[in-house]
Image (cartoon, rainbow, N blue to C red):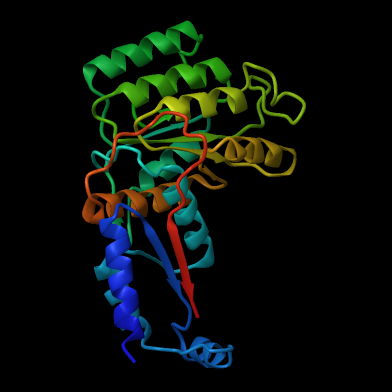
Length: 278
């Protein structure tokens, strides 16, 4: 008796201490509750009441295993990052990704903004496009479609502009790596100029949340693995990346105390609390 209340108090205490609690509860359907009752020491309670209470205590309540994993990854690697708001920037080398990210700024339990770039950022971005031979192909705007003609240097230059723009609070960088303009194959990843080498350095110095999307499998799984191993949150679908980032930013703005100053390039990320109940 009252174990649930004790758990909620523990969640509240953790959140007030500056931690992120990611929560998943099984048993939302009758079939699920029956399965949960058969689990050793498991108790199937009222799903809606539990979700509401845990959410009110300050946890991020997730609905699927994948969402649980993704929010946990964000909470781990973005811990301590400045979350000034919910205005996101988006960069991709594929038009469908750029449009898809813009289409996903509003969803269940989150709402983001994708603002236009200010005059200063737009002028800086135009300089980047000219420098990298993309000015005739690419419009300097948010979301930014760099096209498959963009190389690794163009990505880094554009990312720097977005990270420094006052109107951007967080950045999603999408990459469809099947282009000869970039160093993305397993044999090229460890070259100094590759996106796999550049992105972790940008992430380590950034004050703002930054996440990466590798929208391709097969030989490009290695790109995702290498970047994630360097501490950068990595997603495999641009729309899902925006959804999970939306949940995370919304939670941080609504529940978290004022963040501590970010220390660039931490030796190891601070682990959030992770909870899965059956």
